[in-house]
Image (cartoon, rainbow, N blue to C red; front, side):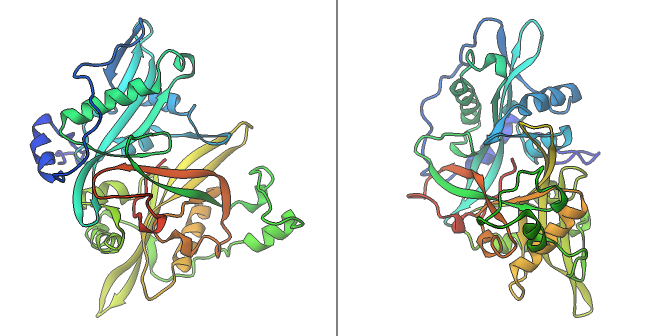
Length: 385
């Protein structure tokens, strides 16, 4: 739902009945969770974080800046990125859970989730998409992460939702997992040494890597342009048809597409490709990527593009579309472009000179209807970092 100013309204508790109607009848039940909140150390208290409050957002951004998602690498989220990621249509404000130090009112820990619909082998299931489990450095021995996990699970259970999906640090009992390597494509070749680029083969010099990985300075696909709000219906139709080929994939509404895929400065870029068909302009393809700031143990800061959702025309090749994604990210001053092996990404990674990175991307999915480890090619889900 949207208000008169075009902002998303959070879902009220009365909407739980609607959510229960979407649940698959044979979903697993979560382990028993206490009806009351877990006990925190003296001097700390539970709170619900208001992400419409700038000060609260900045505190959470500070906290998340200390997360290590990949070896030796930190990722920073802006206030706008955090609100985009945690306030989609129908979100529950109660699922933005914090722990405050009573005396200073500092946020010492944070955990969150957003509701999402996914399709598993033809069944549409409502799940909680678990995000951002983080404890500040001084409290990491006092506040165990399992305490935060139990609290967010308790609040999710109160809404009648039993399915869960998580990324990275989340461990879900009895969950099925899909594991992918993280692939890196360097865009700013003038700073390969600063980016700690590892040459793919012994004996290959940095200069030769620069020549092999150089991108052309122009986009070769005609009809490419930035996505506009008026394109939502076309992209919604394209994306729904494309995701239908995967065993596990999200189910988006038009409002979801408007939230997740319409470009936002410094957060998300989305591009569509138009063609003339029957005298009419028709959108046949699109791609999108998020933007993050990454720092390592050194001072150098990298602007990172992470591949999000896309649809390519089956009459053309996916590497051609992804080459345009690399070029637009480079134009927006991104240093590196990241992608995993989910969806059909394997079709372009090696051809476009992506390098397999140190880290892995792991999705954990706890719903009925999935047996064994998920194959990456059957997963049509893309979760933002």
